[in-house]
Image 1 (cartoon, rainbow, N blue to C red):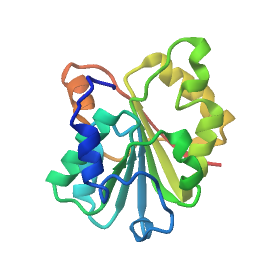
Image 2: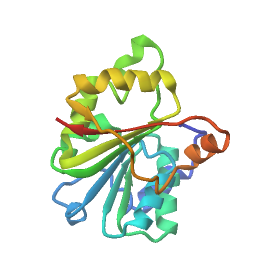
Image 3: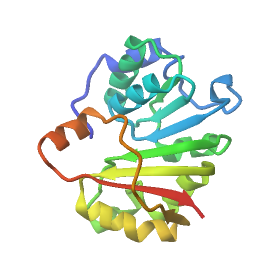
Image 4: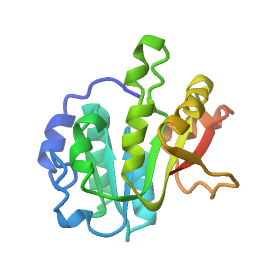
Length: 200
């Protein structure tokens, strides 16, 4: 979710290139080993919590909103984590570089639903874009999707077969971490849809 612009965030990102590089270089040693990707990492709460729980895994977040990205980078810096990066990049602009990597898990949590039909191609779950996302999964890898939006979840159920995905049956593993956004929604008693996909 996009919030108010924070003027300090671009400077903070520039001051911490090891946590938030301007581009993704697949040859960088950081990307060797087990990799997890979050697309739309928001203020970084989920990604930083996951990275702190799994120091042997490398976590990469993409967040196109500079203020949210800066907030996430600040969390990672303050937690002194060496296994997380959050880049101020949109998935579409990062895709060509991401093709050189292979991820055990990809997380898409609470993306913008773009509810109007004329904006369908902007949705992160648009079949053509979802196919690209699934192509980044390692063999046996999976994509986790979460949303509070009923209409977007219904769209997801229509989209994933067209994108070459297979829905995994539950029960799903327990949730290890949540973003502040999800914590607030759950505290308010709002139902959250959760699903896992694998690539066919």
